[in-house]
Image 1 (spheres, rainbow, N blue to C red):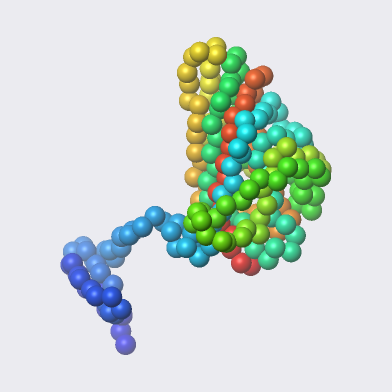
Image 2: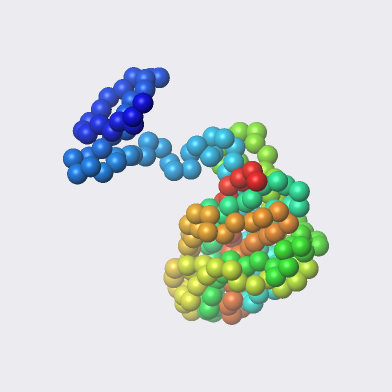
Length: 210
């Protein structure tokens, strides 16, 4: 059977089989009916973790972190595809954000935090009973100082100069899988800044069977 593509509008009923649809210039026409990650969420493959308590976002890359850290355990049999990360600065009185970065430890075999406080990981389909293979931590001690793997869009911004001034205090990086964690690998968000930089972070990811 030859594949058919029909030009113009079409209507269909539940369960019917239809040809693909084209525009009048011969282009294939598609459209989104729901959010682009809905199918993965429905399948229980997307998860999110967020800090619930304001903490230091860092002044330099360090193995002693108070911010969020996502770890894909050894033997998970999944790759963890980072979809987005967000940060909001709560208090930056007198601080200058010189850079905000995605970071990972140099040695993939040693990224499990030595000491940590676990964060609750929730499925993107809130209320569903799906369980993540990846783990999320805060207040972690990493076995080595992490290195930058991607610049976060909040980088190189003057946040505030006094406790009453305003600035670009939040940002989201839609990574869309450009960072992916193999088993026994982790990633987090850290700042290079002056003093008094505190806030909250969140990271959303998809888990793909290997």
